[in-house]
Length: 148
Image 1 (cartoon, rainbow, N blue to C red):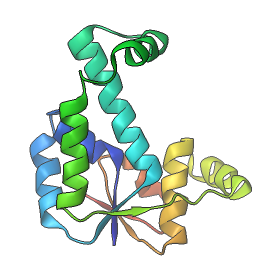
Image 2 (tube, rainbow, N blue to C red):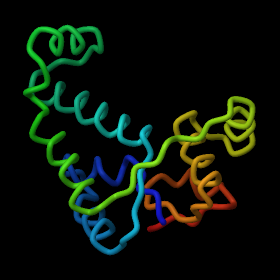
Image 3 (cartoon, rainbow, N blue to C red):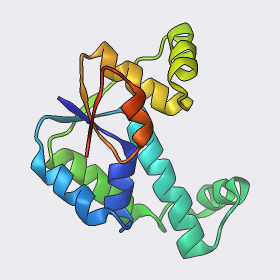
Image 4 (cartoon, rainbow, N blue to C red):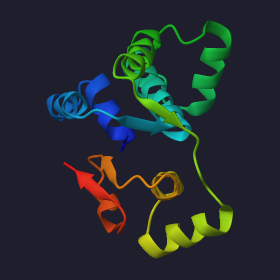
């Protein structure tokens, strides 16, 4: 099993400069997985970026107000595409693993953000040794092989 990091989906779904590479990676491998945290992060990034791009909304407070009053119509197409992709590619959804003390140790030892540390610990917990990511920080994790 291989974990797919947030940035692969974001590049593909939001037509980033590495969108073609992300698409090839997703098509090249089977037995892919994501965590609940990755799903949350992908959806949040999509909403934030499209709110800025399509509505000119930059602040989180204004975004929350917009969603409360008008919903997420401005981002629904990309969120639906993501949900469909997870299903079509038969991507396994895993619960995050994050014991607080171990999380802190991994953040400090490998100089990771909390979300990246949770991904690394989740991989270790499920004995997953490969991650598809454009994030070079994961190369510091000895139990992970980074693709590309």
